[in-house]
Amino acid sequence: MKRMIISTTAILLAASSAYAGDIGVTIASNDTFLAVMVQAMKDEAAKTNQPLQIEFADADVNKQLSQIQNFIAAKVDAIIVNVVESTATPTITKMADDAGIPLVYVNNTPSDLDQLGPKAAFIGSKEIDAGTLQAKEVCRVLKEEGKTEDAGILIIQGVLAQHAAEQRSKAVHDVVATPECNFMKIIDEQTAQWDPVKAQDLMTNWITAGYKPVAVLSNNDDMALGAVNSLKAAGWEMKDVIVAGIDATKEAMHYVKTGDLDATVFQDAVGQGAGSVDTAIKLAKGEKVQSPVWIPFELVNAANVDTYLNKN
Image (cartoon, rainbow, N blue to C red; front, top):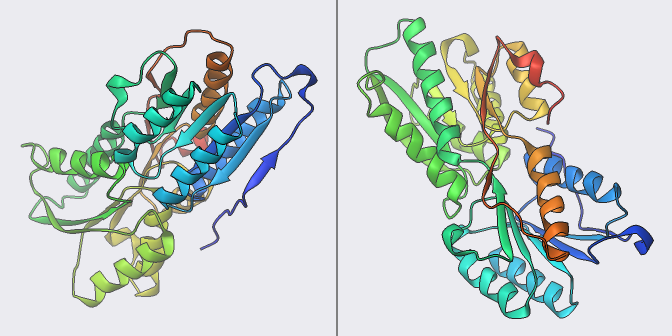
């Protein structure tokens, strides 16, 4: 599967009309959704010639902490963090606060969300809602297809140390526990770390082990598409299994259009990316900002996919 890879980039634009000095940005990894979010950051910054220095942490929390230390040493005017591990945010928050540098978390919810203070903020979406929308849609489709007797499902999880993976998976468990959907039975759940290749390998291992799920629920689209590719390679007819992801990436929209992916959940990469830059600029100027800012998730399936084709 083709993945969008963005190398470490520094955007050094003319400072004449910049309003907030330099802004340091550290991004957890280079998956498809985050690539779109980063592009939205660049586009928003370009509107005012706002300099951004963008680094990628390659899913390494220590590398991300080092990047933040470098931003602080360079005396940037604000820092934007898409955190690798949610548990690291109290440390990051303290680092920025001690340095007197405004801090904006984006996408991945910080564990210290309620203790951020006036010079820090969060822009993102409620991850529990994504998993709930996904699981309820799978439940609905299975009922529609009459598959309501011990319907075995598999869950492909993201990085377990991240709030998104934990909450999206929890939501599936919560929906399965309801009277309306308790015919769904979780066969297994394992992490593929947001990676489509690892998800494809995991799905292949499950098939080899003899698992025959009626549905596969993935914490993101990249992994869902990896699962689809594995199922098709093993000779499965996609009409016989429901596969659902989260993010509504462009590639996932193509899979929904062809019927290989049954559902996904739109997460607003552009809104999060642009919003984080706008918030960082305001904080750097000493303005008050709203926090947290919750951007709603939206269900996407074959009935409404055309509406979302060009959003991420």
